[in-house]
Length: 313
Image 1 (cartoon, rainbow, N blue to C red):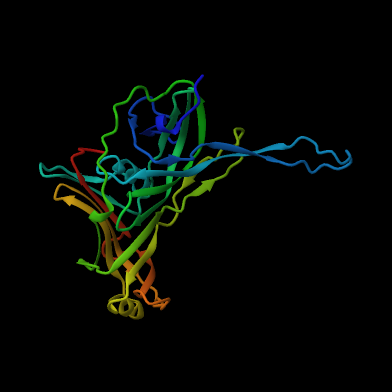
Image 2: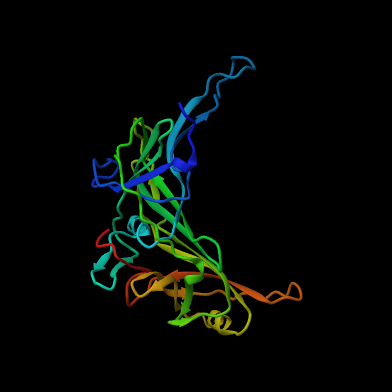
C-alpha cells in the first residue's frame, strides 16, 4: 500500500438533483490548489463525578463537514463554482464567445457532491450536500490568481473506488493577475496597489436532531459583498465619494480578449472615510474597506459575467 501524495489527489464534482444525494453521473474533474473539506466528529469530555481522578471515556459530538477549497480562477472550470455560489447563469451563445451571466440573490441555490480522491491508498472522500458559503479573491500585480471557497457539506462517505469514474483531464487556462483591472463608474481606477473582495451567502446551518448527527441543510442568508482597495494617494476621488456617502459601481475583472473574460460587478458600493497615514519617506497609501448593497433599479447586488467557449453550466 502506497502513501498518499497531494500531487496525485483528484477532485471531481457534480451538481445534485436532490440535496445530500450523490448523483450517479455527471461528474467532471476540477483543478484545485488545496482542500480541507471533509467530515469530522469531535469528542466531549466526561463530566461525571464519583469515579476518582482518572477520566471516564468521552462521548461523541455532532458531525461537521466544512472547510476551505482553494481553486484557480480560470476560464472554464471556475464557472462551476460560480454556479454553486450564485445559481445557474443566463447564457447567450455566440461564435465570438459564449456569455454566462451569474446574478446574486437567488431564492434557492444548488448543491454539489465533491469527491476528493487519494488513489494510492486508495481512499475517496465523497462529500455530499456541499453548498457555497464564502468566496474570497485577492487582486495584485503578480503571482497566481486563486479563489478561496468556504464550503459547508452535509456529510462524507469514504469509498475504496471513485464514484465519479474515470474522467478526462480538466482543461485549465488561468487568468493572470496582470490582466486584472478595477473600474469605478465605468472608468479605470488608477493607482490601485492591491484589492480583495469577499462574496458570501451567509449560510445558516439547519442543526436539527438527527440519528446520524449531521445537519439537515444549509439555508442561504443575506448576500454580502465587501472588500478592501489599497491605493496610492494621488487624488481625492475616493475620499470625496466617501465623504458624500453616495454609492458607485465597481468592477473587478480579468480580460484576455473579447472572447475570454471574467468580471465581477458590484452595482452599489459604499466607501468609508479612510486615513492617509504617512509612515516613511515612500509613497502614501490609503485603504478603503468598502461594502456593496442592492441596486434598487436592478434589484441585485452583484453580477458576475464569464465569457468563454463553454456552452452550458
